[in-house]
Image 1 (tube, rainbow, N blue to C red):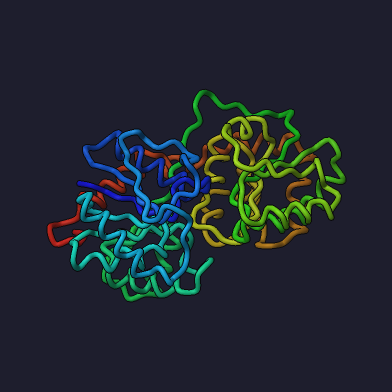
Image 2 (image 1 turned 135 degrees about the vertical axis):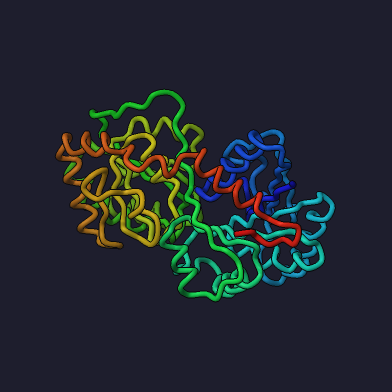
Length: 367
């Protein structure tokens, strides 16, 4: 079987790209499948996350190309790759890409899996995401959500002609032993500098935290289109040098290992990889209880704190309490491995293999 993962740009440094590459690498190493990545375009010369050398990469366009005006050309370019490379299954790692892959089913016989990395309630970036979800419900061979909550939303709101399967993101174990740094005075956040991740809200929180704790710092890992506005907001809040945008970093593991806690201020998520990464590094977690995902990772009062979405004062209070209470930080760290098995890569790989192996000759998923 030849499985093609279809991405907007697999060279990006986001959580979607991270988990997709993790799964593809594991499938490539552990099965006899042929694995490929297909991107609309690749903005960077090499991917941020390492891709197995046995995995080929294809791009539909040689340069950055957006817009519905390219719709028919994009479908044609995708079909050419699917046919030429004899791809059997296309996994769309962003549901909006279903609009290009679903038209290929009739003439090529390719099977299409719609992998939802946001959640049913959110329609970021483009207004026609709702339409592609309804289209996938009718025409995809399977829909994969990241949480049981999102699966129920699909089953409740759509007339489905394909199965919906909840498979969470994997929690990748760090290399080597992990120990919590009780002396750390570093708050860590990570993600694409974009509206979804709520870093503008984070600056407001930091303005209520850092001035009262002059020996603490806050670092944000990641890059994105909101950098200029965030830099200005940080400057206006007089947090220069205290709250810093680190950009794309090569050794993310080192930042996790020397941090005291991880904070996420997203407005919405699917199942955030950054929380799973922080959990694997035994960091106390503080997160807005956004839809969906954080409530399935953060156990409030056990391994971290869940805060009402966009409640700046409550978020600042939760962080201040952790800063002032080392014992609570140590307690949360010690409970970080609670429910970790559900995010084990072996479990998740088996779920994906069950899905891929269940396609019959007609392209339908068997019950």
